[in-house]
Length: 69
Image (tube, rainbow, N blue to C red):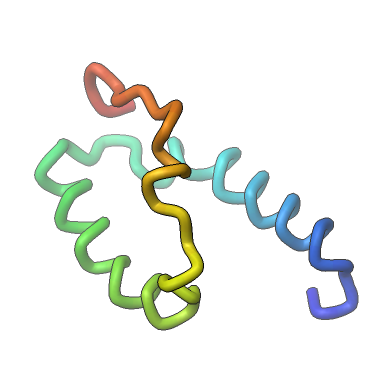
């Protein structure tokens, strides 16, 4: 992946997550999803520059789902 330009790599990773996340989470309830997210957050924090991430901006247009997929 290191041969891809940054924009293409970001687009690829975004599509990978969007296209596979529902299938990966299928059958997990709210509590299980929260537990999974809590276990993933430390790994995410290690790999992303959190000081530069716009958390509030990322959720500005976010609509919470009524129930899990």
